[in-house]
Length: 388
Image (cartoon, rainbow, N blue to C red; front, side, top):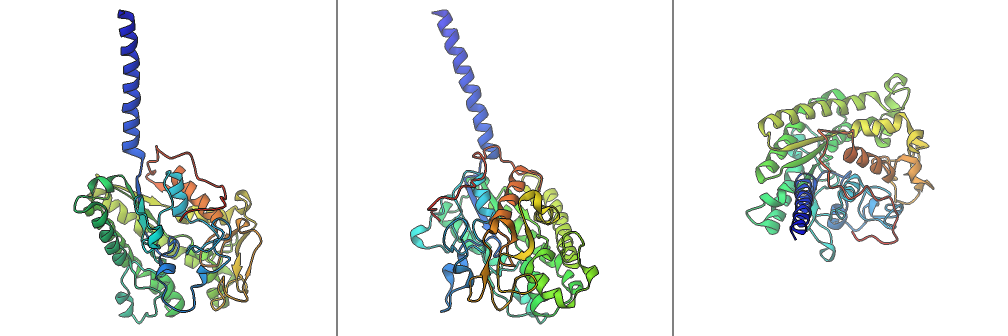
């Protein structure tokens, strides 16, 4: 009898150790919710669900969604976005867009507030400088208001527990703060560089606002290498010189230098915020180097075409500002997974999968994102039906 009691005590101790270990792992590495802010690189349906014009947006038409969903979903890609792969890697369902159809609206695991054309800084700042005609006025500040409205319905006045177990994706956002002045207001790259500190301060303010609400873990993406995007390359093609391009990648050096400057200032802002708020985890997501590597060594990652757009309307990079993917007289490649660029403004699902892997598994986050409860990897299967 005594030996049997000793045996039970031993078993109980082992079970207790396992439970303590599991509790520690869940407390440190599991996320129950994802909340995302951003622009068209992260939007998964907000603009499509709020569109009011008679002619539908081009990204709500085939071949958008051809690779994964089998139909357009409002995502500016042939399939899933980086946020989709992050959700899969963390064992969560795809995050619904904030303005998704009521029948599909389920915010029990988070929401996506990203909106195409969104800027970080409110458009009044640019209007004062003679820059108008922004695609959207749903800036980061407005997206934060949507976030607060949703929180009030999810957790009332006490959201500490929910936000402690949430991953906040603060972007990608900021590209439109530079796109509009450069492409549609004839501003020089040097002048647009002066906007960078203003943009970064606004991102820092948003981060602090989420911290005040109770957000503990925020992933803050930097700018991708915009000098490798077809719409920029097309715009600068007639006015650029041979020495303006990187001889290895063909990307535009001056535009990539603007992206690098944005990222350096952002990293300094994050370091400042870490010192002010040592209890929070601010993770810098290096989109720039993770994507640039694909241009530098494309064949190693399965890409055959780098700068040329998969779906477009012709021109030196198969991008046309007046004949965008989905419209009449545009063409689409047979295999988007062999392309880096999807429509000249956004990248393919194949790129998003690789970037998400680099963020979840390293080495493109600083510090590393805690993912001790990752469900077992990113799903690369193509199911016949996917609930959005």
